[in-house]
Amino acid sequence: REGEENQTQETYGKRTQQFESHIKDINKRWKIRDENNRMHRQVEKILQMARFERGDIELKHEAIAVHDLLKAVAESFVLQVDQYGGTLECALAADRQVVRGDRVHLESIFSNLVDNAVKYSPGIPLVKIGSEVVAGYLVVKVTDQGQGIGRENQRRVFEKYYRCPTGNRHDVKGYGLGLSFVRSLVVAHNGFVELHSLPGRGTTVTVSLPLLPEPGEGE
Image 1 (cartoon, rainbow, N blue to C red):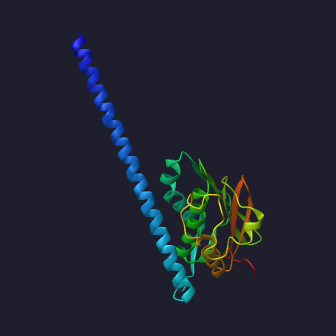
Image 2 (image 1 turned 180 degrees about the horizontal axis):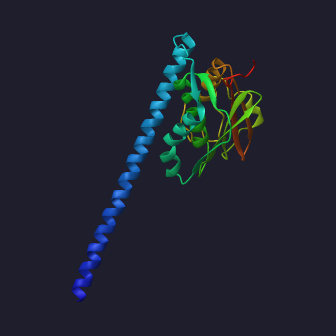
Image 3 (image 1 turned 45 degrees about the vertical axis):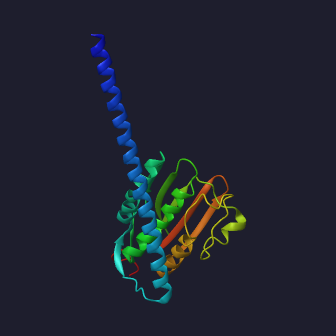
């Protein structure tokens, strides 16, 4: 009987090691996929900005249900956020959400904002996407509880290639294109973007886009 117990323990130990090895392999694959996704977004961002600045991009003008687009963007970051034990909440309260714009570039706007919120959150990322209607605009807010941005840097965050100093220049990946690109795309959609931040308490980036008039509105 003692031999059987030893054999059982040995078998259990091997299976535990195999399971732990399998989990490590999965985590490694997730990290590789996240890194590939990040690099793909960076390359696409650079190419889109170059085409946009050359005037090679013509925005489509379609009716876009922004809430559906925001949910899809949030879903694309779930694994990355879960990996760090964080949360990504969608609190979409706007009772109107249809704007006229280009789906691909609207997705780029919000993907950039969520990407920033996640990567500038030291430790556990806590990110919230909210929406409301204000004076004929759909107002979307992406909020994090990350390291925040000092007042002296807030005026420059929309400059091309500008990146806020973090104390460790190697701790955040990127090329400083995000918010500059976001602003260019938002302005092209006849909207505007604002940033509010407190060091050590987090950042909120607000994008306001003109809503499509409802039937009979303005008549």
